[in-house]
Image 1 (cartoon, rainbow, N blue to C red):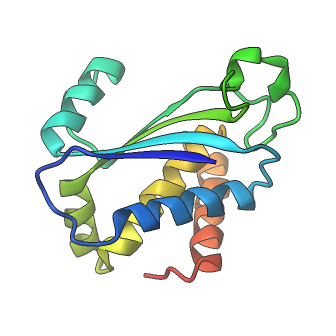
Image 2 (image 1 turned 60 degrees about the horizontal axis):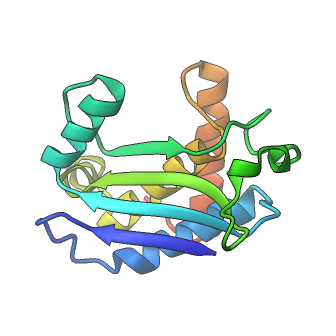
Image 3 (image 1 turned 90 degrees about the horizontal axis):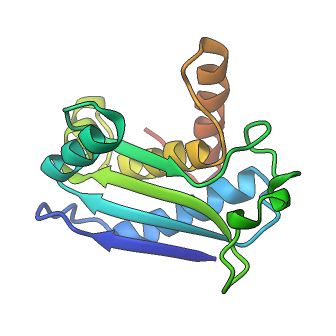
Length: 164
């Protein structure tokens, strides 16, 4: 398992962010029964940088809490059955499944933790799980998709002892 974590924000979260990220990446993969060792990149940035990335890649000129950039398309969310058909899905050096990139905003983590009345740890954990589900093909554009994703997020956080 390779989890590359880069902290590029001037804002200090003042929590053990590496430990939280690693725990939630592994918990998400375990919950979805991922049969492969995986590679995920997580970058923590400030609002200005996430706004720039959001504008460049999505054409939305505003900051956001998290961006997910999946490397693979799944036949169905969380279904790893046919992933080996795509040779580019795996790192040729390590054999690990390349899941994708997660970009998180420190300011949004702090603001949303305060807004929702829970800890910074809980907010970071939630955003990592949310993004990991995106990397595994889940979405929330339709109500039924949103309900599935929300239930999975709740269960993963609950299994890891992270509550509001």
